[in-house]
Image (tube, rainbow, N blue to C red; front, side, top):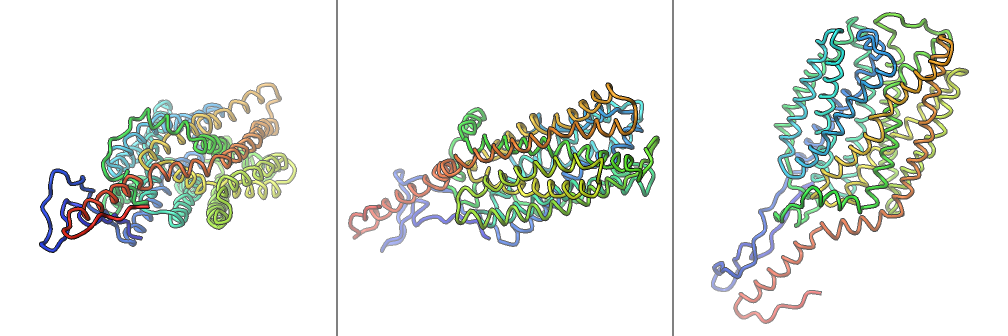
Length: 511
């Protein structure tokens, strides 16, 4: 793919004629910027680098969950405080996302991404040297990691949106978002595997900065910073018209109902994936203890087999789910323009009973619980690339960074910022009124999870409402940003050139 803007004849105030080009005059129309183009291979190399960094990004999200039992033993953290660990991470992320969205819409996206990688890498490395006496510093360091990852989650999809368009964009976003479940799963795997090999969970946090240093070098060398709206050849995005204010962008997004309802649907997804991602390894470990397959963990290092199993499950179901969702969307929207939100709604409504059965069956049959948990994860993963495509199609390029930031912020405030802590809090509250046995502790955690099935069903309803407004908002975004100004300017230039060429009559009227 080559992204290029071609200038019409006489663009710089010169018109060809029998006597050669005429001189520019004060009455000539304003010139458009020089063309911006990128070879196809460069665009795909940039996409590959961004996918690699997205993998590391989500490994950072869940690497602590892979060694959660060890972290709890090391810092003497209860279930409720362990959930707060993830809440701090998400809270810092959501507070930072609007700032990075504002910067990404107005300043160098490449520089902002580089800063984010340096921040989360440095904070993660330093957290591995914190003493058990200063557990609050560990919480703070996780918050700084969240701040760094906010820059990437907010800005990287907008760069891809400016490198690719239409079906190419759908496919590339599908690959990009495959690395959400793959990175999440590898975070569990890396954390638990390193803890088992070294006998020290902190080495997992010391390996990640080496991978992130490579990512930073690749970003600087291979990823361009394309003009906003470049792939769609949008004149509004490249002619340097005045920037709207952040408040104006927010008001525009607030009136965009497809964006509002899809954001609420993403929030429901975030609530469930946040709770499952943080607590599922411990839930599966305790289920196996209840079935008599393992002994309880009383001191670190704890058995990490369930983190490995859940991580592998997340990777496999994530790859299949993202590809399945993106390909189904690409084919179905050729016959139904509302395909994307309808696919999201159907997958969430089907995921709800799967998650419910996975929880209910865990005390009686562990195999069936794993099967339904895998189905639920697969259905949830179907939506990652599709929801990103919805946002890019209904929002004009000039404020896509702000849109990504707002969606992330709302999704985390009402979703995974509180759900891990809420699950731990409910579990602790239920334990307080019951006998102090391992079975009762497991049942308390199981019952705290049940609300996730109802939340994900509400998310399906939000995507059904998105479908009602999708076509209208896509048409408005296209009308606002697909080159109306550019086409009008071309028409004016063409008329002006014809007037200046000797021997030419009146220009033909444009339809």
